[in-house]
Length: 133
Image (spheres, rainbow, N blue to C red):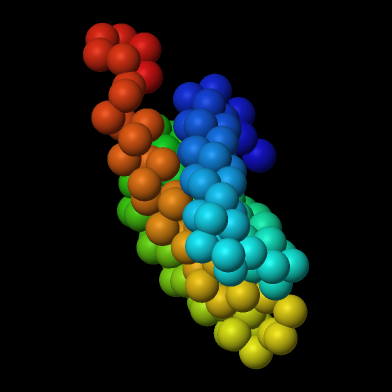
């Protein structure tokens, strides 16, 4: 699946960032007196969905890079574009289920999607300069 060490390290970094930010989210809910089982389950569900979405992106881009290096950049580009549409549709279906559910807090479930972007930004901001990334 992922044979590229850099892609694996990136996925782990981003997943850890999402987990930490989700813990902060739950702490904020607790400080505001709004913490509940629905919030906890929504946050866990959102964290899992966002990490799985990022994993799918990582796998697709890793495979596309291999195809491009193998001399087929057009097919690699098509694979990445197709994956983005499929991932978006799957996330849409997942979050429709969240919105219809009575046991998951919708806001707590949606916030981890933003946490992926924040984690990527922070990982790039604190990346060591030089050869190692």
